[in-house]
Image 1 (tube, rainbow, N blue to C red):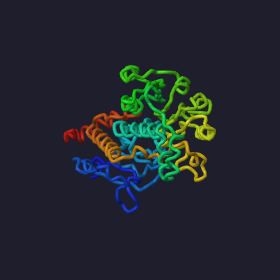
Image 2: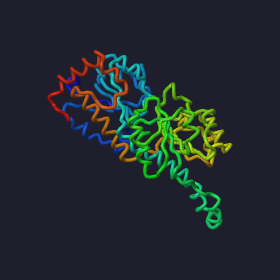
Image 3: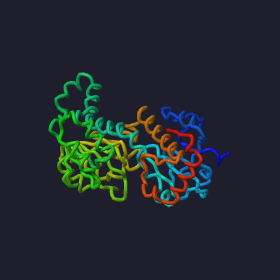
Image 4: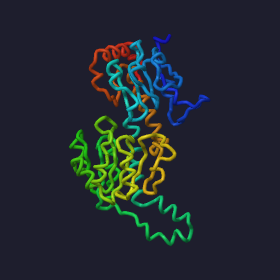
Length: 354
């Protein structure tokens, strides 16, 4: 019967030890009710083992790793649908070599992550945590209000390292603040930048000019520590750095030293180089940084959106159609992928599934 059904595996980290869902907002009913689909939760392993995936057509993956040892020998697995947009936990080359499409969920995270950037920007420039602490000190704190003036945004410069899916959305949300927009991205769509009123600038200029600098680029060998001591030194002493992308994009040691020396005004970090950080990590002791546990964008809508996008992607593959959000687009022209997809279309295409 396994060969008749389109079998979808979900990594074991979607469930608690008692079997209940970790994220109830991920609605699995559309998958359970889809014609010809069988859904199975895997045992928790990271990286996933190849033998766990031998009899599956699709994998929806949360945080567990998928590397070259995870690729099943059966040749049946057609798609790995990552829950989110980061895919540094997936061996992309191994997927491509095996004719497996790697899919991410840009539509699910675009607005929630962009809102996280705006949240950090407003909290940092408004000195929200400082003013919260003052209020809790009672009358003495109220007497200190004048010493902790916030920073207005009109005419200030918002910079983004990256102007892709999320970076562009940040600028859309920031329009009412009447800021100047700049970005650096060697892969930028110039028409999108022009439509948003974003000036594309060189990397060093981005660091020199931004009053608020947001990191919105993927982690890769090229972007690892792209925010380093030399570039942080270019920033204004009044500037703020925000990172909601991936921790290793920023040299955290260099950033910590700059924050300790007050060479920049502050930082908002949803990601760190080591997650979770050591309890004695110096960055945890600073009063000019706002931290979140790689979860600031986690909302009911974010997780519902990610889940819906993954479910749609695997259903599209079931019916022999190309899904949205494919990372390794070269796989779409491979004979392995084409053969697999045409086979699925022959088996399930008559079911519709739109």
